[in-house]
Image: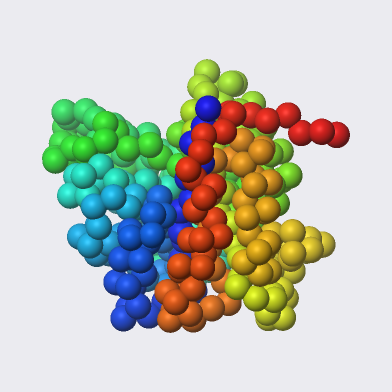
Length: 309
């Protein structure tokens, strides 16, 4: 049986700092499982590690996730230290999720990597970070990173934290199978997520690995009312030929059925992400959102449910 858990994500839009504390407190008090912060260095969103550190200090139960943190362009030793510190100070509540980063040229400049370099850097850095979390001394001579007897202390409270990966491209799905402990895609339908899971499981089996049945998740977008025209146009540009209504729940009443469609396909860690709303509106609407979706996380479900047809 898998446990359904509902998290809350901020995406990459603007969120006022004055409302962030109220949001964190509301998530903790209402019973959401986790808070997830995305990364866009050249955009208006909050820095995920700094904001999650603030959230850690205000909470005792809420898990803290990155959705996703860009790995290529970061020093793996420094990142291992930062994440280990956050996990220890939060009492083992960190949920790190990594990705390659957006295709925007400004983001590549910010991280100092070319687009074609990202995958190779990622594939070298992630196993190295795991070693830094678990080994007394790490020596590594790779194409990008050179370490000689490096130790990172304190260790994370989790031993080590599970690392989730994002992405939906075929190469990204293969990487999840080879390197990931869980998968957290976004901007996809339940049917696309199910197909992606099959590809991940195939790649994991080829690498002699398996993914925990509890470690399948998705970022699920919603808006409180009708889908704004500008948002629909932006999504159409990102997903040509895809009906925006299949990816974004337009209206709070449409969100539970969309979440359930993921659950019956074996996706039990779901992160709801509001779009098209200002910070104050998001905080004010938190009670209604909790009432609509949190009943789903009180029960356990079969790890896989056969679908008709």
